[in-house]
Length: 228
Image (cartoon, rainbow, N blue to C red; front, side, top):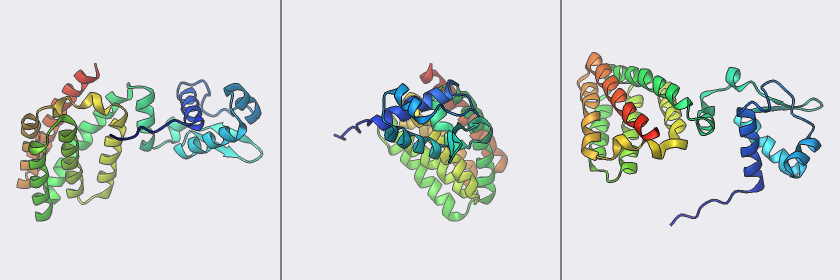
């Protein structure tokens, strides 16, 4: 058994402030109330508030300037993809937009992988695909499937594709349990993914793009059913 983490008062305050910012109760570009007023309003000490502020500054939601105060950052205009897990946790509506990017980027990655994969990449892809079939339980199959996609991104030779793939997977984390549908049956999961790997290993760019698009579309519909 794994011990569950215990929430501290800083964790709770960080979550409350984050939700208030994302919900627009503290609009982008505005200064937060003075620390003493805000601490009293949330029923915490200023030290606790400062710790929570530090986390939210690091997350890209706040910016603090000495002598000016703490301002809500315009994360929608200035933020990066690293905010996606936080945004998905706040509103599942983001998943639809993530799926759209997943389809277009995933098909492009498969096409580029078919053009650039080395012999080592092709061997690794075959081995990782086999693990999808060999895995037991939806969670394990889901993780094995993710490793195939990471290998496809590496096969492009472009490290940015690897980072984009990791970013999309990280964005799923808050709702990952609801997205396990396509991976409940290892044989079916393997059968859906195999055409992508086979086309990449054959160096057929058009077939890889088409197979990836078909795979991503099919798994998306199953995932949407799980979310519904």
